Amino acid sequence: MNDKDLYRMVDEVLHYIWDPIGVAGEPRARDEYYAYVPGVFSLVRDGKNAEEISAYLRNIATERMGLTAVPEADSTVARLLLEWKELIRISPATLETKLPPMPDYEE
Image (cartoon, rainbow, N blue to C red; front, side, top):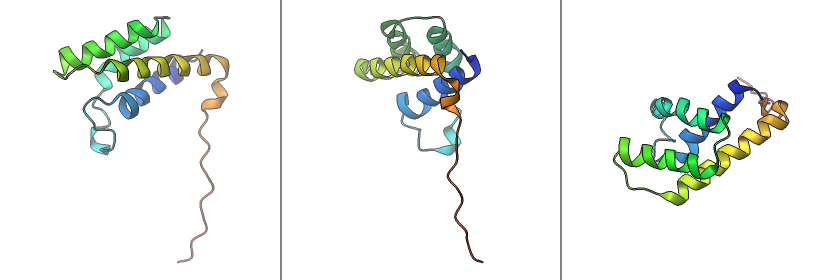
């Protein structure tokens, strides 16, 4: 498994899906969850289960951010992270980004 790809996926899932403070649509807040990526990445990489990852996310939201717990969202994100881990393990090539062709513009 490629740790770099997994780390990137953890970062993107935390920002765009977990997003407990609702900043996913704000480009200037792209680094908002960077501090939490290493811990979540370690849990996912080291084979922790969805309940353990979910509890960690819930602890971040409630203890560090002072938010109300949303266990269903944390569980969904934990399962998604584990699915990404499995996808990366099976086929890292699936993560290659292929951009659509640019249209021709006349000036």
